[in-house]
Structure formats: structure tokens, C-alpha cells
Length: 300
Length: 243
Image 1 (cartoon, one colour):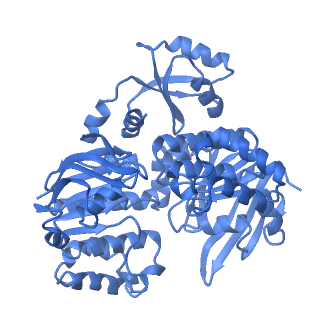
Image 2: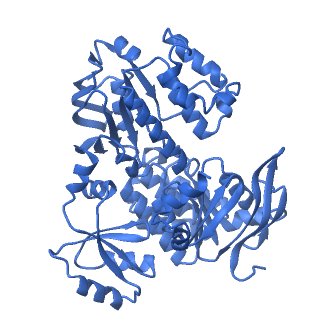
């Protein structure tokens, strides 16, 4: 009762949005689709929610075929699009009531499922949706996507532009929904959120780069990775970019993440080189790769 | 005149909407050439504060100067001396790359000759030779954001305000964007930036964190992490913003 995707392709004129994509989401899984804007995430969501027809390939959601059983799918899934799509001129309560009614249910009947989230916006239930803050809109949109008790929940970039505190709370909510047996497919451009999924697919330019658990994906990173810091970040980046043995270099918070073409790395000569470039306070230490490192390595 | 090389000077600045203090007596300074991270949760008052600094919203009380100009009386001078880009508004989608550059150059009062020269430099530097006649709408988001940043620097402003410039941008382009920021700062432009990516907060020389209209913390990322006894800015942010 999860999701199956086989060889799905979709083009818009000359632009290929999805190129022969295949993967499955298991029932009850929290599955992350991780990739930047323009990777094809929204196109895939629209195909799976029966709002768009693929050029090639098959897909099923909750056991239903996206072409033949589209009506059944629409009854069994919840979809929170990336763009806020509720009625701005209806109040919070009117929106929720509207979505419940459309699906032939009532707020009371499924209140249990949305309670956690809805209580946070209930004090504002008479406010028009258009007047809510970003975080509150997001909570209302999730409530509306859940009010008919869907089997599968599609969330397209629910946390884009949301601050780290609200993002953390949102993911805690998703974990609780998962415990209630709902299969969740969620997309995000934030790589740190990937670690919170059971499995993830890294997607870029319409292609899946890799699918696995977050731990397994990180363990596939091909080279030893080093944290390098120095007193001047700009000079450090410039110097490493011009270094003949550099394989990859990416700023990462207070450090630069560095891999070397040589194996093993010659730390002493690297340090001498950096000192020669006028850098001081140089530190070179081995570090663990993150999902973001892996993504950048695969996307290179 | 500017005091002690501060290009932004803010003292007890407030903005009230009715009884609600969106910005509540904030004070800080930003030095010339500094990369200053302006952080806070959604609704903490960042945008309201930024609007006052760029001269499009008048404060309720307090004092502030930007590039030496007063935020009450000299807003037009402020606008001429700053650059601004946000994720929501940066370039015109239905103009081409070339038209956008010409348009913004014109707005900022550059001569045709200056615009032509700047355009050549910029197209070359960003590698946009193939797409100068393409509509901006057709460019990948990352390219758009890099172009928008370059356009915000066309008139060589003293300060550039960046409002969530990298939201949704892929991780590689996000880093290229930050390399452009470093370069601009290296060349003396002051950078005032908001972001929800906490690794980007680490790239800043100093960071302020706004909570409910007030600045609750302001220091270098290193000192903030020491003070809150943690090793990431994400934890600093969560500790502060969650109250």
C-alpha cells in the first residue's frame, strides 16, 4: 500500500523534467526526495497525485494505478503542494471544514489525526488564511491535507523558507504521523532533513543519483574528507581552489571540506603550501561526510 | 559622517504596529567590509527591521544611519548607496538577462557606457555568454540568484542587503554564491544577509539573532558557540529561538 514508480519520464517541450525514474516507497515509510529547485520533485508529485500524466512509465499509489484508478487515488492521498494553495479569503476553520466536506467527512470524525497540529492554530480559527504567518499557513495546509485520513501523504517542500525551529517542530509532527501508519513522501532542499527519513532518493536534473538509507548513502562517500580552517576563509578557498592536488573543496560552516587527489593525503605539504599562501591558524582534521557532501560529490 | 568606520549604526530602533512591537529597541553596528548575518525565526521581526534600514519603512522611534544617511530623512540617499536582493524579488522574469542588467543599471543612474562595460564584465564572470538574450524566467534558480546578486552590485554600493538569497538553491550553487559574497566583502562591500541555513551563519563575521522583536545575541559564530556551549550554530539558534 505504499508507492511504486517504474520508468517514469516526463518532458515539457525540450526540457526533460524526469528521466526514466524508478523506485518504491514501502507502506508506512517516511521517504525523502532530496534535491534542489528544478530537480523534478514537483513533477513527480503531480504525476503521483494524478494531476499530471507521465509520458512513459507506470506508477501506483496505495495499490491504485495513477491512470486507471485516479479517482481512488484522489480519495486516499493527502497532498500539500509547495505553493500555499488554500483559500486565502476563508478562515482557518472554514478551510478545514471545506476540505473535510469535499471528502465526505467532518472535522470531528478525524480530529484525532490533526489535533496535534491543529491545536496550535485553533486560537486563530476565525482569522482568514491569507492573514496567517508562514509557519501557521504551513500547519493549516498540513491539517487540510490530513483531514480525510489519507493512506499516503505527499508533502512538496513543506519547510522551504521556514526557520530552523519551525522546521524541527514540523519534522517531529511527521514522525508522529508516521507512527499512525501513514506512508509519507516528502521533498526538501535541506540536506540536514534527509537524515530524519527512513530512506531517501537524491534527485537532480530529473535523474535519481542514489537511493538508500541516510547512513548507507553517507558511507558511500568515496574519499577521506578533511575539515580545514584558517584565519581568512576567502584566502583559504582561493588557495585550495588553485592547489594542484585538490580533488574537491566546498565551504562548510566554519570549515572547508576538502578531498585530495592523492592517496594517502600529504598533510604536511598541504600545510606548507597554505602557509606559503600567507595563511595562519591552519587546522587540517579528518571529518565524517554528510548527506550534503555525498550529494555534491554525486552531482559534480 | 560615519563613526569608527561603521556603515550601519542602529540605536534603540523600534517599529510598532498598533500595540505590537515588531521591532523592539534594537541596537547594533556593522563595520565596513563585514559580513553580518541577521538571523531569527519567521515572524521575529527581521523583515520589518530590514525595511527600515533600506529606507522603505519609517521607524516609530530610535536612531539609525545606513552608509552615513539617516533612516528618517535621507531615505533616497540610502537607496542610492545600497544594493538589495531577496529571493522573492530580484530580477524581472519576462526581461532577458541583458535587458535586466540595462534596466537596473539605468535605475541606478549609470551611463550607457558604464552599463555596457559592467554588462560585459558580469556576463564574462558568470559565464552567461550563451544566455544574454534568454528570458530570466528560463534560467535555473541558482543562475538567477547569482545574476541578481551581481546586478545588486552594479552601482558599486557600500552595502548590499541580501534577504534569504539562497533558499531552495542546490548545495553546489549555494556555495558558489557564498564565494561571490566573500569576494564582494574582500573588495570592501559590506554584506548584510539573512538566511535559514545555519551553516551559512557560520560564514558570517558576526551574527545577530532576533527573537520576538529583540536582538537576543550578537557576536562572532565562534564566541556564540562557546557561550552556548555547543559546536553548531543550529544549536545556538534552537536554544535561543525556542526560549
